[in-house]
Image 1 (cartoon, one colour):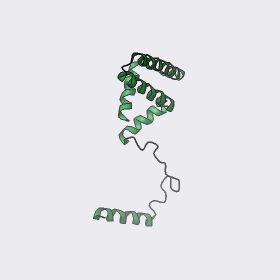
Image 2 (tube, rainbow, N blue to C red; image 1 turned 180 degrees about the vertical axis):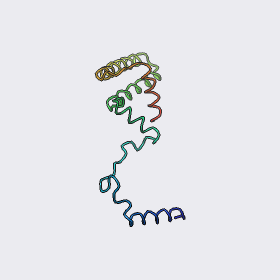
Image 3 (cartoon, rainbow, N blue to C red; image 1 turned 90 degrees about the vertical axis):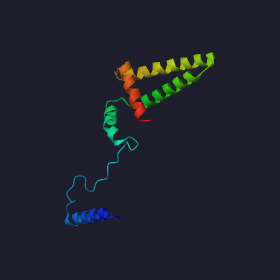
Image 4 (cartoon, one colour; image 1 turned 135 degrees about the horizontal axis):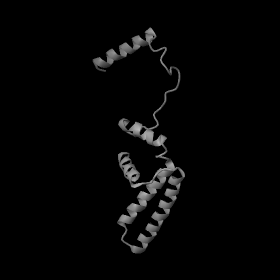
Length: 124
């Protein structure tokens, strides 16, 4: 340990002995563990706000991932019959996703889609 750590540890021990930590809020209660350890600290508040607003539901993320997967397959598909199948799957998934969004009265405008793509890129 370097000098700074030794001094800090000594000050903490002295504060504990003097009872300076006895009346802190939350003393004796379990620690609240951050539910977003993989998200950079500067983005956690924005992520929490989106989650609390119902914009990042797990069901939505499943639909979004599936839609992105199908779109990627479509982009690389060269067979016309396979492309038609994938396009049909994409249309069905989009309809199902839009039903979920409509139930929550959330707009599905292009502005929200662009914003969602930006957020998704940040968390990849």
